[in-house]
Image (cartoon, rainbow, N blue to C red; front, top):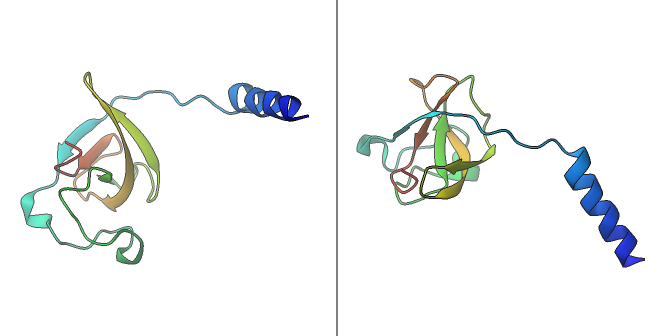
Length: 102
């Protein structure tokens, strides 16, 4: 019975769920002046900007929404991040990364 359940779970996740598509984004990093400042997506959830937190990114108003989990990859490494802030100067294809994520 466990084998059938496992097979159905794998089939569902491999065939029925959409496969994420990679896209190119412009990336910049937070200015040092933002250290300790409140994060737009909620200080009760995400707290304040810490440049050493590699999971923190900001997105433009038309970009990924607060709480969205993303996997960012360069030619050398991939990291998992969460949209915790908004970037007023960022367009829809622009992300602002913490210093640690950069």
